[in-house]
Length: 203
Image (cartoon, rainbow, N blue to C red; front, top):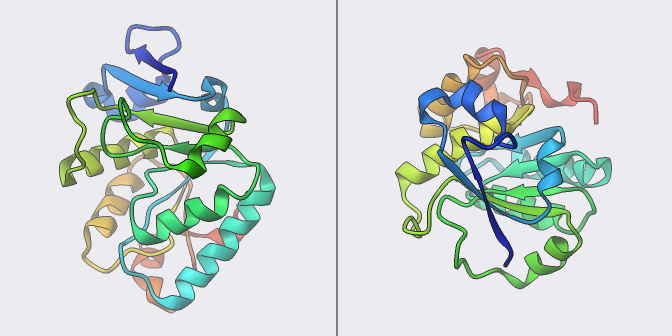
């Protein structure tokens, strides 16, 4: 893999990280893939581990629409539903930014990542150094804030009431970024927070 680093002192360092993460913005970002993808408008997805079946199906339908829209999707693709969303998106042609909750140096690439990387539509992005090669809950949470700082709009298909995902959503609301969910009975907690209907999102 052709690994490159972007330092906080570089002119190419994304300003959005400093704006939203402040002093917690990473000093170094490690990248593999097409750096031009970082200039795109981005849409991210965060989801609880377990979701109602109706939410899962509607989310997959949305991913198929995104796959045809050309909108860049950035995510850690960590929860089961997020991973399935990645599988759907990999079958399309739109750019994808994948941010694991660990270092990407010496990370073994899955076979299905190699073609989109070669085509320049998959970018691997990490705020973690080579020593941070194991996923932890702390790294996953920081990765989520890192991804959210990049994203122009945020989609939460489901967050269990009183879950870590719901707490994360509440924290992101203070950033005043466009946030969307599926307006369904099981998402009453997210709707009550004022999160918009994803059907209002123009693709």
